Image 1 (cartoon, rainbow, N blue to C red):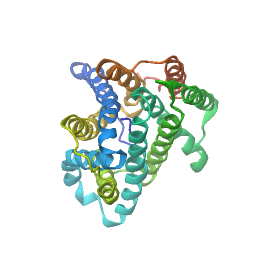
Image 2: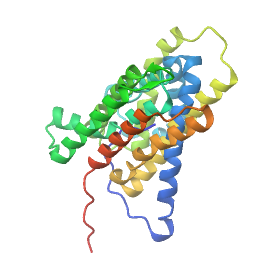
Image 3: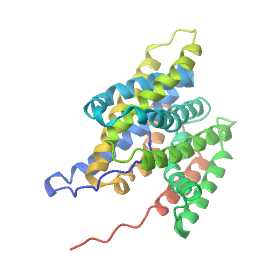
Length: 304
């Protein structure tokens, strides 16, 4: 699932014999993160949103924990309140919102609204930190919001998806806040270690609520497999691949994965769950993904 993009060191241009890895990893990551919405659809009804997200955070942070252990000397005690705050805003709450939305609407609804996180990052930076947003991004935001309105007006199996679209949009907005918090308060720390720390903090803070709301009915093997894949594959390994891409090609190029995630989410849900692509999802997805593309900064000119 798409995550916020912290500040990172300048990317190193890949050599010719390794350049082929970039499209392969981008496509693989988009397929993995697209599958996260499929796994949410399978696991959320059985676990409930909060227990599922707590399990996801525990498994995801466990996969990334070696990165945190290696950089542990850089994580002084004064940092942990900030890490906990980011863990809540950038993981525990938005993950729970997307899990709740997965119980109400097809996987494509969550995936499409998730892609708004890129634009919300720019909006939060403009409103709270005074960063210039520019006419191009302002238009992109208007187009993106119109896409959300179109999406919220749609129906799936005769039922409105408005609340699911609202939950996903709120989750994407929280990702935008989280990205700005990371950029301004956790700069200079290894990104994968920060991810491990924030996921672990989110897990600890969410655990009491997960225990209190743990389902009383037995959970079958299919939801357990989906939840395990969501935590280990989509969260732990997905974040590791994402940060590897950022370090090699830079955040601006790595965020291209955002355009591909909804396509894979809809494809997985259609292939494996039989969920259709509705006309409103198609129109809304075109508007939102187009707005994300429009809102991207222009590529820096190449130096000779």
